[in-house]
Length: 321
Image 1: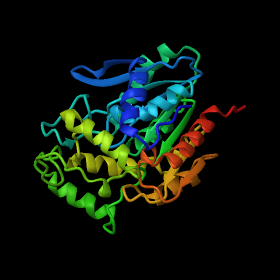
Image 2: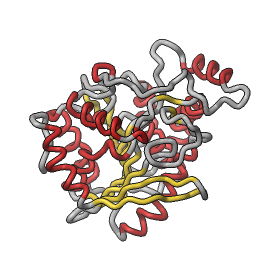
Image 3: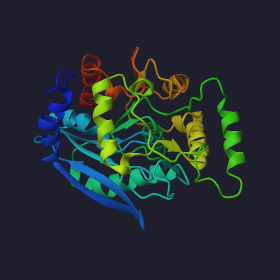
């Protein structure tokens, strides 16, 4: 495995990782609903043993996972990933380029299911298909494996959004405020006014690695499609309801596949308490806690990052009866 470490990070990404993944990449659009194209990318490993489908987090895109895909390809996995609706180069309902909106959280799930059934499975033959999720994508992933338990063979939920965190303010208060603001057809509007792209601010970011943060921030500056940064009123309401659903006894009992949940010790974005509840309710769920790290575990310093990916790949590679 060739790891990209902090020394000369950006140069190595440009000269090694980017050319490696670009040579193995195909892109396209997949429309579950007419007029609502969902952007996806497909990467082919030299010697594939399985397939990984990536479900990214809130305000992200598949383009944030270039380094992650570099490791997945080297480890022998074909990779697929989509830009969730309202993100990146996929279909958007609202006109504000900085705001993420979704009418129904379920649409994320149905888009992922459609891509997997219509694109991933036909191209994968007999290779097992795994799911790798981060944050919001983890809530999408949890809903998916609960509702469609045969769609994937295994799933990794990395810092999954199973409970929203608003500091000391209860979610119920935030939800009630959002509901009031939505009166009069304003669900697509932001919770708070957002009219410009954010300034670079590593200290307040979700990353524990400065060089990785700055690398992707430059990508965002160069592509206006990657500059989403705030939720709509509707997104907040739909996400709060989705989090409640996916940790419920009824739905967690429907999971039939092996699951690994990776938890960031210093996560201030999502609730670790909700992740712990999910683990306790999912039979056989494996748990991997990464202490002293912030929300984005795939954007940590190399020493911890290597351990993280080794744990993820070991889970995917493990043979089960």
